Image (cartoon, rainbow, N blue to C red):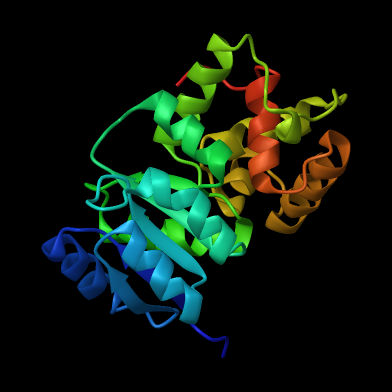
Length: 221
């Protein structure tokens, strides 16, 4: 059995931390290894206690999540960082993802969504949801669809099946759901997804989503 994913929660609300900790304690593949009540506390913890995934609240005293994010990246470059917020601010979401956040969740998300986000970020680097997709679409539209240089991908000639699979990925469909919708086996869908990465130059699922956004392959959410 693989070691559980090591998670640290950084949030100044003790009741929120307790709620998430209790909910995730039911999951055998995740372990909450520490809690922090501000960004400075988190960075000090990470120096001796590296984590796989960090749940990082945006609004905290002393050092908030926005200030902490780049510092966390320096101390623990391989950790996946999921930002937590009560605000639905699209420009902020895009800024944080460009700074190195791997996902962005509303603090009203239920425990299953938090669990899914942790697992997906750990395995696939990014977890996209309606919040992040809408933010990326709106922000890129404002910039005339210009992506930051490191996220740009060359134009690729995609066939109808590949385009359909990419659109379904943007709708957060699982491999099995995509396979059922396009009448292929899950294994074939995975092979096509790998082929899409090669064609678009994307290294991750996130790169594929960004490619789809840039090339207007997804409808506005």
